[in-house]
Length: 236
Image 1 (spheres, rainbow, N blue to C red):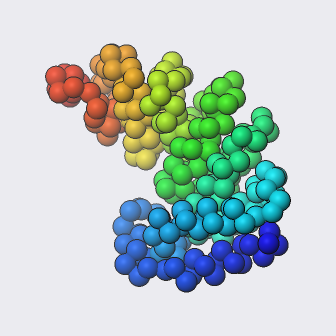
Image 2: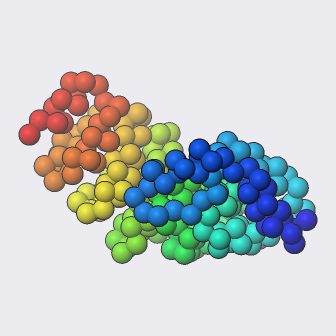
């Protein structure tokens, strides 16, 4: 099965094209994206179906297949690849950080790919190997916009759990005045999730930095704060 699994997946995706989905896909992105036009729920089912059929299921074979899927540049194939990479999270080792970083550099070219890979796969890696958060922080100074966004959105789910607060603030400091709107939204989203477990700390961080923080980031960051805190944060 692994030898021809990629061609089988491609055929299955073609057979599941939904014209409405295909026509609506581009409006979610400012950059041009390559897609079949398959509903995300269907892509998720296909990812699960074919993952269960792959024999043997060792991590290196999975990662190799992921790479083959990513080469096509189709969004749906990337989503399947990133889902498979997450499903082998129990087998992660320290060398996988470099694998994920290379995928971002080579294959991530829109916010959806970035978030799909980072929210779960890279986040799970960081939770298992928290010492690599220092490597994550180096992404904030990259010339690659997707690495900079990745530095923030990788910590969205850990932030929701109340983890890595000081690191979240350090990453926000580094990205505070980033000129890229998607990077600004990324770290604002990270702060918003952190505010669920650390309301006062995030509020104080926003108040300290609100004069320098772009309004886009500010609005994201305070979205889940109480009304009185939001009003104070929005004051000129």
